[in-house]
Each structure stands twice: as C-alpha cells, then as structure tokens.
Amino acid sequence: MRGLFISFEGIDGAGKSTHIGALADAFKAQDRAVTLTREPGGTPLAETLRKLVLNDPMDPLTEALLMFAARRDHITGVILPALARGDVVLCDRFTDATFAYQGGGRGFDESVLTQLETMVQGTDEHDKSKLIQPELTVWFDLAPEEAAKRLAGARVPDKFESQPVEFFRRVADGYARRLIAEPGRFARIHAGQTQQAVWHDVYAVFVAKGWLT
Ligand code: TYD
Image (tube, rainbow, N blue to C red; front, top):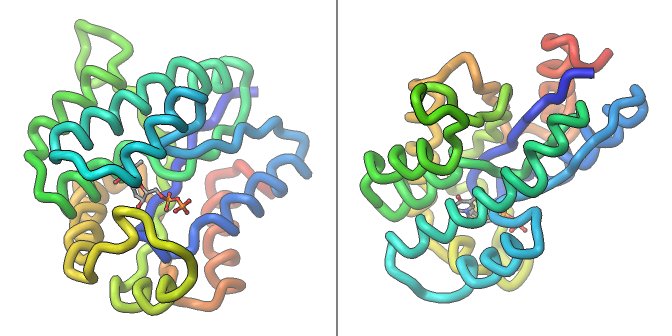
C-alpha cells in the first residue's frame, strides 16, 4: 500500500475534528492503517512546543520558528516513518496553518515562511520544488462570524482562539491564497452546512480520489 498524507485546515471553530476522527474510522474499516496526528504536536517534543506556542506571549518570528521546529520533529519522527509503512496519515493542520495564522493573521512576512518551509520540508537540497506536502488538504471554509458564534463559551480559549473576528478574516484570506497558489492540492468544504452535509461532502472527496469506497 502506498502511504497517503492528508491535512485538514480551517479557522478555529470550523469543526474539522469530528470529521477527521470519522475518516480515520472509515479508512480502518477498509483495512488501511491510519496515523492520526496533529500540529503543532504529534511527538513528545512537538507537544511540549505546542503548549508554549499556544499559551505564552512571544514575538512573531519566535512563534513561526517554534511552529516549524515542532513540524520538523513531527515530520522526521512520525510523518515520514508512517508514510514509509504505507499508512494513511491524517494530520490536523500542517504548513498551510502557518501561512494562514502567522502569515495572514499575524501579518508575518510570507517570504520568510517560504524559506522556513523549504528548509524544514525539503527532501532534496538540489531541488527546492521537492517539498514534503500533503497530497490532499481539506479546507473547512467557514465565515469568521459563524466560527466566533460556535466558539463562544465552548471552552477556555487559547492564544489564537481569543483573537478578534478580524484576525480570523485575515487567517481565512491566508488559506484562500494558499488554495489559489496550489488549487490541485485543496478540497474546499463549505463548513457552514449541517454536520451531516459537511460529512457527506468530505466523504465524497475521498471517494472521488479512489481512496474510500
Ligand atoms: P487546533 O488545531 O484548533 O486544536 P484544538 O482543536 O485542540 O484547539 O489548535 C491549534 C491552534 O494553533 C490553532 O489556533 C491554529 C494554531 N496554529 C498556528 O497558528 N500555526 C500553525 O502552524 C499551526 C499548525 C497551528
């Protein structure tokens, strides 16, 4: 079996988590080994970095560097070994989140993020186009106002969840720019529908790819 690397993105409150779990079950039911993981996180070191980066105040460069440090550890420790085994890797957020949150939301220089992406995800030092990227990125696209309503009072917000709606508008624009740059990699899901309708659309993407029946 060929490994599959799939990431899931969206602003906070877009509702990706339940669908990621359901997809893991669907793949397992069709006899595929699944590695379910997340960013920032996925390894002991990256989970430690996650706690820091989601809670402690820091300047934008430090934040971006910690995201990519966590990612490097996650790629080498979990993602590449899982793909080598032939697993389906379902990753709750990946580099598009850095471009959306640190680039779009925080306004951090995206050319620096591109350099870090090349450094951290490059597999061939002579060919910068060979980056470790998901084969498919499912983007749960939800209006920031709607996401804010869903998040209100749901739990104690972390550093990002407590940002104002304008921040999430910039994050959503950041995701849209990533989709425009690489339309073939993205599946855009209208996350404002009922959970059942969202699941229907998500599942249909995987059936169309021939990965689930
Ligand atoms: P999230 O994936 O929403 O997990 P949970 O459902 O447990 O809250 O939380 C991760 C947060 O980290 C989210 O607000 C987005 C942010 N983030 C970045 O800012 N940059 C990144 O590169 C990544 C991976 C996440």
